[in-house]
Length: 84
Image (cartoon, rainbow, N blue to C red):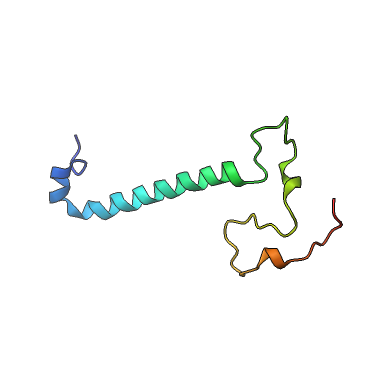
């Protein structure tokens, strides 16, 4: 096995530990983000027969953004369009 990939060799190459931690954390975040996109995104549909247009189910005051930097409270916004 390559040096730095076992616990014994990591003790002598301790500077690799932050690298493994950051790569592991980045991989976990990337997997979480892909799962969130697949499950929560209104553009993604898993059942086209029962829900062919999932983006029409979004309410006007519903927040679907991952991050809203302006601090907008979407529950207090009024609708810009007539009710469907």
